[in-house]
Each structure stands twice: as C-alpha cells, then as structure tokens.
Image (cartoon, rainbow, N blue to C red; front, side, top):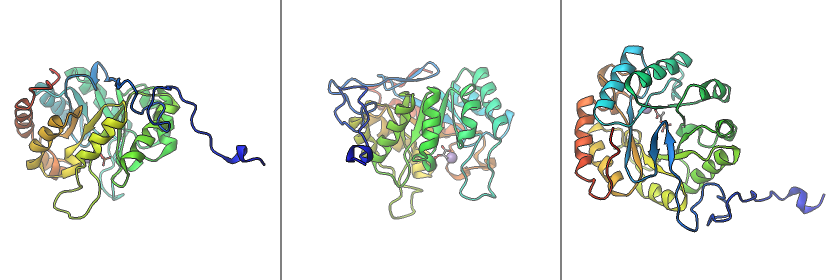
Length: 292
Ligand code: PEP
Ligand code: MN
C-alpha cells in the first residue's frame, strides 16, 4: 500500500478564500465576509443582535403556548424548547418526544416565532427535518459525527452547541463536519465549559466565543443559562455578550419556573426576561436588537 492510500486527504476546498485550510467551508474568509444564517425569517450574523428564548423542555401544549406568547411579546425573535432531552440521569424527565415537536410547531405558528429544538438521535433526523425551523445539536453530542452529518445532509439550519470539554478549535471542526455534509447554515453557541469551582454551573467562556467568531465566518451566540445556572447573573452576562460583539443570545424562560420539569433553578420568569431585555436595550448604541 502506498502512503497515498493511508494518508487522510485534506478536504478539497469549497472556498479557496478560507484562511484556515482545515476549515474550507466554515473558516474566516480572507475578505472578512461573514455568513448570515436564518432561522425562519430571523437573521443571525447580520447587524442586529438576536434573542432565542423559551423553556428547557416542552412540558404541555398550554405551557409551551404560554411561553411562546410571553417571550414573543417581550422581544424574543426565536422560540426554544426541548422535546428530546439529554438528561444526566435516565430517571429524569426525558421530554415528550415527537408529540412535543408538534406542540412546538403549533405554539410557533400561533405566536409567529420560528423555533429551534434539540435532536438527540440520527433516527429522528428525517422526521424532524420536515417539522423544525432549526436543529439544535446539544453540548453532549458536539462530536457525535454521525449525528452531525445526518443533520448536515438535511440542509436545515443548525445551532451547534460547544461541548463543555471541547476546545474552540474542536468546536469549529465539528461545524465543518456539518457543513461538509451539506448545511453551512450553522450558528455556533457557547454554553459554558468545565473548569474548577461550582459556584456557577459551568464557566462562561466569552473569550472562546469571541475567538470562534473571529476564526470562522459563522454567527456565534451565547447561552448564559446553562453556562452560569444562576438567574440573577444572566442580565449582566447577556449585556456582556452584546458588548462583546457576539451575534445573539439563548436563554431559558419558563412561565412558572417552580413547576419546571427540567433545569428549574436556572430558568428566568417572564418578568426576569422582561428585565433582561430592558437591560440589553441600554447597550445597543453600536448594535440594535432585532425588532420582534
Ligand atoms: C439545552 O439547551 O436545554 C441543553 C440541554 O443544552 P446543552 O446541550 O448546552 O447542555
Ligand atoms: Mn436546559
């Protein structure tokens, strides 16, 4: 066997203007031009700062409808909510599954907000692709390459969360897997990494997110809910995200956090979310919020 047979070839570049040869489809372009990625009609990576909000999990028709109504009326641009939940314990609420996707579709239609929801398994990708406005790849699946490729093949938009043990470079390479499979509609989402100390749930790596934004052509957003886990710190983390020049925010908001079946301690109430949006407005001199 010749070495040519066993040496992995570098990807043939779909874009010779990419600065990093490892990232021909997602890396920074030499001319600095960036990708604008739409979820529904909502643009990420353009001038306005974009807000995704909603509960950790879809719990019932009534609950997701109330959540969509509240966050939409308070200025969110995109609804979030998990129907398939990656839970650390197999005995925790695992989500409603496909019926939950249908509830998201209805809440989304009724309240005029496109939605993003997590896909856990390759076997659900095809059915979900017809129903969702965007897939979320969760932190725990950032390097599930078969799932990345299956989602990429659908050509649908993808919110790709960073794994809590992954470097920013590994995160960008994961995005390249999705793009190579067929979808370059990728939004990177920083959601906290493991360091030491448990005062905050994870460690929000704002610098890693800024680095990823500079080294890629993709929009980068921040999820301070999972990164920090403490509702009272989210307003300032959101403002820092905006001030850092990042492209948007994902936050967990529950109509009644005391009743939440998942991540109850970190969810904002609708009133907290209203305060967060008001706080963000104070930092919009250079970058406006996308109007709801
Ligand atoms: C979530 O968004 O609800 C979630 C499970 O996030 P992560 O994958 O970042 O833990
Ligand atoms: Mn959650």
